[in-house]
Image (cartoon, rainbow, N blue to C red; front, top):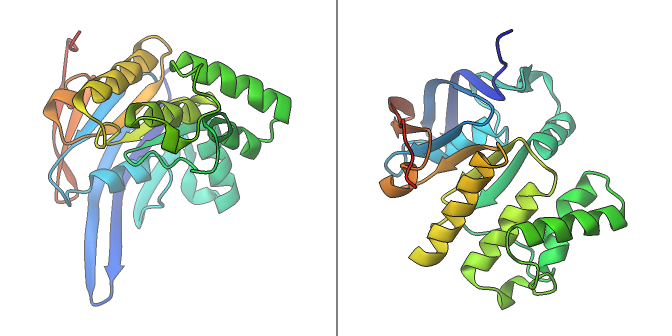
Length: 235
């Protein structure tokens, strides 16, 4: 039996209406993401990297074409159904962390579990376990302003992992970090892929970072102009 890609896009375009001007951010992109695959996305500013990531993760509906998540077309879903699919399937890691300042690390990680309908005791248990897994067992009661950039990104990764998603979507996850913290975060992401089998989609500007992926997509003017597979990843 043929495996169903966890995410698939067919002939997807995205056009932004900027008043008198229309900007085509994506132009007829087709792509399949297999379970357990690690894909990095590169390209110059304005090439459509983040738009592609948002479409792949069903955060953004395309102007034309279709997006399938576990073989289900998102065009057939209303916003509530789409939110449920994202909540179960996809965990998000952003360059700017997107943590809630007034909440502790533990409370930030518990938040998506509240949306998932988990009871408070279970939310706390899962959040504590996930924070320990990313090396923050001793920082659970700290708020974001009491954490380093690398620690905040670890909280963000723990939050993304809390619902046990199939796919981790990371948009420039090391962009606001120093090189040492960045390397630690990349190693954590790689371990999620290699040891836990998480599918990873990651936008980056750095070829060094992209090198760790199974496949790198190069975008230009909203199109995938080149794909590069790597037989061996950096150790």
